[in-house]
Amino acid sequence: MSRTLAAGVGLKPEHYEAALGARAEGLWFEVHPENYMVAGGPRIGWLEAIRSRHPVSLHGVSLSLAGEAEPDAAHLERLAELVRRIQPALISEHLAWSTWNGQYFPDLLPFQRTTAALHRIASNIARTQDALGTEIAIENPSHYLHIDGHEWDEIDFLAELSRRTDCKLLLDINNVYVSSRNLGFSAADWIDRFPQALVGEIHLAGHTADPTLGNALLIDSHDAPIAPEVWQLYQRFIERAGARPTLIERDGNVPAFEELIAEQECAAAELQRASQEATA
Amino acid sequence: MNTPHGAFQQAFAEALFDPSQAIHPTVRALAAQPAFAVYRNTVMRACIDALQANFPTVAQLVDEEWFRAAAALYVAADVPRDGRLLHYGGGFPDFLRGFEPAAELVYLPGVAQLDILWREAHAATDAPAADAVWVAQHTPEQIAGLALAPHPAARWAWFDAQPVFSIWERNRRQGDLGEELNWRGEGALLTRPHDTVNWHEITRAGCAFLDACAGGSSLADAAEHALAADPEADISAVFASLLRTGAFTGTSASSAINERAP
Image 1: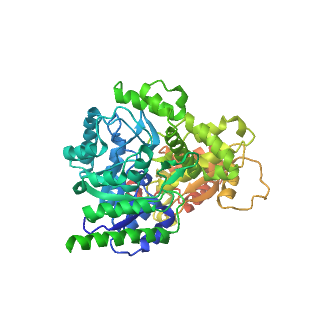
Image 2 (image 1 turned 120 degrees about the horizontal axis):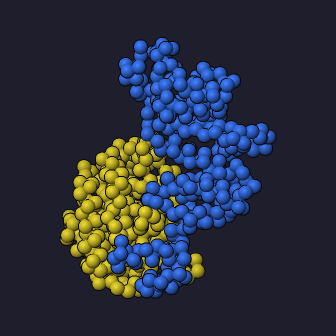
Image 3 (image 1 turned 90 degrees about the vertical axis):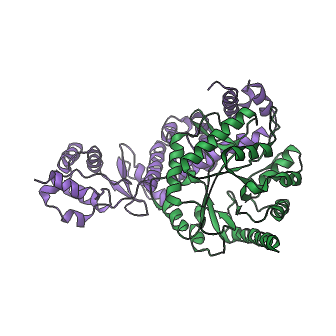
């Protein structure tokens, strides 16, 4: 990492030109590598152009690390090729599965946190890091279901994965908030327990209430501005942990670039405050 | 994979499309929770959104509700194979061909195929295209003996009975949809010599010429192939127009000359 990453923004094709010209201090961009696994053409050309001006993070959604099977070798090779081409500042994936038996289900699906799952996922992370030649960060997903059969608490599970593989953790604060509301736990307590030293990146995003169940079921929809409760949890975490590269994620109802930059500036201001307090 | 987690994944994956049939005890309990619908909806919506993005011309020709209903049936029959949703929908033209409610829209599968070809051209390997300057460096005898490879981004298709290219092209460029269509067979050629995908109407002889080149034939053999497809074809005009559109790559030129020139 040659430059300090402050607050970044998820990169959308409609914002390529604006992103290329953006000049905010510490700004970086994140993409799903799956969208750039192409042989050539203008799409990868744009990413390379943006990479020539800004740090880029690759945030995978389909390695299916929590699956029974090893990560697909061809997919891993395509990811490694993109890593060589883009030289990302950060690489991350999710504590979830999405492929099974040669089929891909575009979501981050849940599993039972058993010791067997821990062994399997640690092995999948290690295999991925070996293939890429670098560490990755693992993100806590959003939860919707009460699942019987967990043998591990989620934070302990993530910390143990990091201990075994030297992976970093990606703390998605909106996912914590959404999960806390859906499953009924204290998001603040959860954030306070999270092993801050392992956090390599933070995600912030918006959520929506389920159209039929309302506030009883929050959906991690990434299609709205970041909620005030999520900003508060973010402040709470970085006050304790200090500054970490922080991403503004927006995948639906994508607004003008300036609107995302306004959220990026809020996060950047929080990061600056956290850094100043740390040195004061 | 007959492990407990493998069985869980299998049952969960099946329940995404039919939660009422879940027999795996853990998955049955999950599928009975109202929030299970979040996963079902997210997976289905992401797949349908991908199809709508990948088949913009098909989506434009039918109304959105119709498109999304047809897409949902396709998703249930053929879910994505990997995380590259950009490539999803390879079986969609065939699905439309057998889709009874689309029976009257006979051109729709062909339009879907052109949407696929556009995506392939857009994401193909970049390479310099052979042009007239390149040709001028060779004698006619050299050229006849060359095996000229189609450019990596070149895609072409011939449609026997319908003006599929005209329908696709007018909708792509939001052109005059009222203009009368000449109901005949048509060919389409998509090229991307640089950043932008271009499209051109192409003759049956042009398609045959490119088919032969893709199979490794020399230009002389490709010309014969084209004449077999259309004995009236003006081969030098066919070749000139293919060259002008960037349908060939010029990269292997020098080695080809060394090997093949008399």
